[in-house]
Image (cartoon, rainbow, N blue to C red; front, top):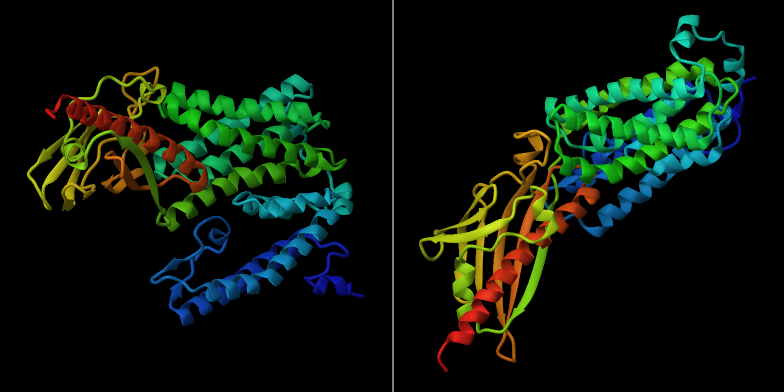
Length: 463
């Protein structure tokens, strides 16, 4: 008789096979997604076409400001679907003889997509024990020794990941979740699975091969002139953590007694899935969020004097900040062409000039401008003389900026510099931290220079 638990997606009792699991999850996600689309259409909002984007991006594109009640309804409707996915995942883990705590991966952005297909690739424990092993030549390709299998796993996964990285960055110009999360997770997961193909390896071994795989890909990108040192250094902390997570999951999976019978399925998921997710992410091409960075400084001078140096300022001394010695673009001087709204301010940087048409000229209170064009964000630090990956152009996008001067009661002036920018790197929260850090450095360099010039003028002015 048919187990009634198979028909109930809200119970965590029992087990569920991989085909039924995958089908049930996809149906649930599609149903919830289309309910949200209908609600969005009725309320005048547009829901994204790829459901999983909701979990780790801005959710939806709206024409107007969405009311709180609309979001409340949408997320309350999602609760039963999330519960169903969690219970189905618990049953699938039980069926595959994997620890139930792995259900937490469902809540990790982007990795939950990979995890879904990995679970769908691992067979039922009972059936896996009865299946024949893989063809003999597959086992012969992977050395049986601990060192040999580790080297083979590192080299093979690094080669495949390198191709996927080139596809994402240089092929379609997509610096997204697939590149910075999917590829490192694949490196950690598959290198640890391959190293433990013949017999389970220790946790330390699985984590070590994960890190070595990521490091090898980074060195290859540097040696082949695909990337510079600075960008690799900024990406490495995220890649390091994600690869360790992948290696840990690989360690858990390779402990199963029947692991070698389904190793090829699990490894194949990463090989085939990551390029597909990269291409889907590129096709969706979401609009990045606009961020604001504001920095201020108190200047011992009146607003009129400060204004003169805000509009344009003389050559800055060579940078002493460590960040600007790595190749990041830094400000050199500012030139004003004309006066008033419609004039152009040129913010000259080490890599070129920002062309800034003036939109607000309220002397001596507010100077605001758009950004008409901008130079590369950096000159790559590399062992080669000229490395120019796609992300140097139009991935960090300055939209507009302003200087606001506020007179203080003690006769000093509060000068606030603000920049609004977009960043076409994902995960946005991670790269947002780097961008804000760099923008703060640029602001401080400019504001402190203006402060020095204005205070010097005030000291030399006749009483």
